Length: 307
Image (cartoon, rainbow, N blue to C red; front, side, top):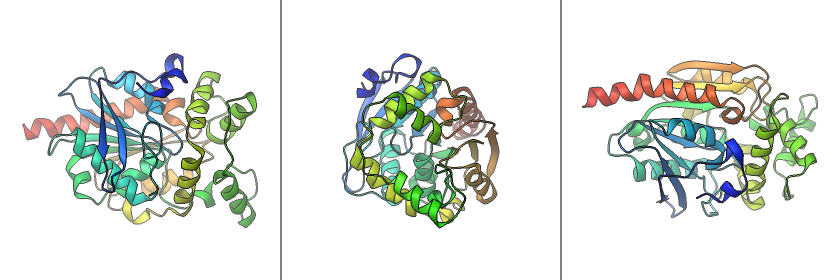
């Protein structure tokens, strides 16, 4: 059971996994993996974002596990996956490959969903053989492929060098986040969620983010600062849907629109008015619906044709 079960309560508490396992990445990094739902059901793989964990997907896991095999894993250094000194986009792709190899049968297709750094993980792995073997379709939630600091709206200043410099300092801060206080909740809500987010949603996200080790948060901030996966997006040839909140300050809607324009096989784009960066928590039913649609359209058909 995730240690966050005792931190995040109520409807946002992460469900208990049917099975837990450890996937070992190419460089030896060990990744905590959870499998929910019935064996033999269509597979969904969930990849969370920077400073989060499998607990972030609680709503999606709870719903989808009724009739899907839901695989969620902690990115290296996050949640219950031990820290590793190697932090790079290629390491994220290696880790995803290890999870796919540990949980899916040869040739088995799945819908892969990623939220910011999780979406970048899917982009980084796009040209790899194992990704192509297992990816039936992808859902990219609130993510981008490059210029993450330059386009960020977290710092309320006019665009320019000063805003980029200050954004880099804020997102790459070494300071510990400390306990979840009223001030901390207000800051997190401003930076990552829409103005109408319910207090319970804000509390859940704050506790997940504050549980991320400071050194891990700092190390990965530098990877995101210099990230450039534009060329990998063009290799993402499987059906891909995009979801973004129009009030997203971390990865503003400009990123989603760039992805839609660059993806070889975009099958849908959804812009959610007034929602922020945490779309799977802010709009759980919409994200669940998009995943179910992708499974129904691309994974079930492929399984039937391959039978």
